[in-house]
Image 1 (spheres, rainbow over the protein chains, first blue to last red):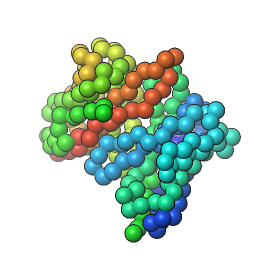
Image 2: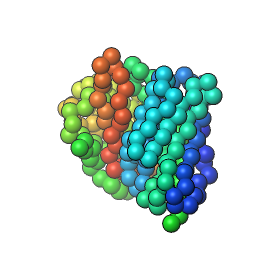
Image 3: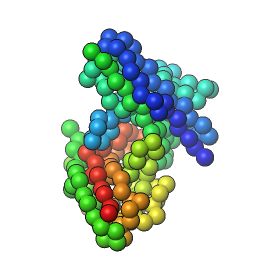
Image 4: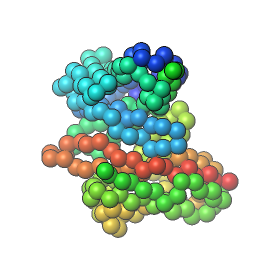
Length: 112
Length: 116
């Protein structure tokens, strides 16, 4: 069955460093991959979408890579800030379908 | 800004009760979704709707039903609540792009339901 794996252990980093989160998937060939941010007690908020024919996408301090051979996406936050502390979810889907599969998320803590 | 609202932030119900969760979006989105989120399991799709009166089962529809009588409103119904339905319930909406291209989903704040 389709499976998305995100590191279940929290990631702790120092302010100013680059945070790198990993999303691996199996038994799936997604047309796109999305990253969402979720704060405690709130719904996820969309951050970035990258399509299968794109290797990398950037938005301000965020960078996402998508390697369909390795079946992996990396999500980077450069110059991290305590306000970046949250859970980050990756999600996969296919064009023409409505079902998006979400990972369980990785919790990021940025220390001042 | 897109706004997705849910009728309650917290809800406590007894086993066997019929429970209604309401979701309203204000951006004329075609698609609406209901998920539940449990620790370590991620978001799991219960039902979705791509048009008024249209619905499709997601991955875990058992014990739930939905209703979409108006484009902006999508209701989730627990026919007879059970303790294993204690969870965070999240509603989302999205547009359908050209060629059914996928767009991001906009989520509501969630309803934390406890069934005792």
